[in-house]
Length: 140
Image (tube, rainbow, N blue to C red; front, side, top):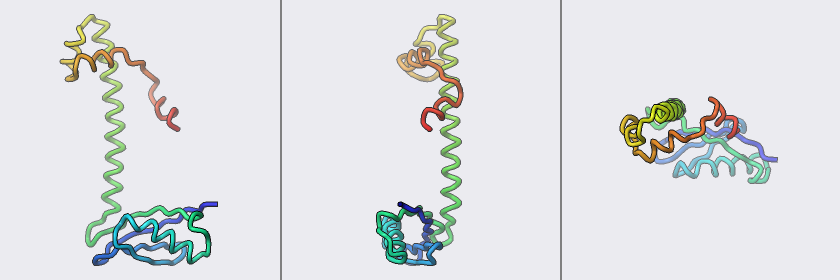
């Protein structure tokens, strides 16, 4: 049965220091992409369990004075917000394309209004609309 542990990584000199608080363990890696394997091996050896039974979530805390974790958290939050804004903009574009098509506006003109090609305008005007939140349920 696989168990997941948390490992935190900081940069010290030319090394990445990999700490696993749950086992009070510390190891190091030359490159950040080695941190997960090094942490897994440390846990497996320390607890005398098979390597395949160990999973690790690696979080980079800091590099020098750079608070990497807090900046990455902010970036990920901004990306989620941007994705939500993009979904809403797409929904509104579909709605407007359909409304303009219903008013017999040509697809070339719909495309010009929406700043897309007339082919894309046609796609938007014929897109089936789903209730808000439907894409979240489908992917869950």
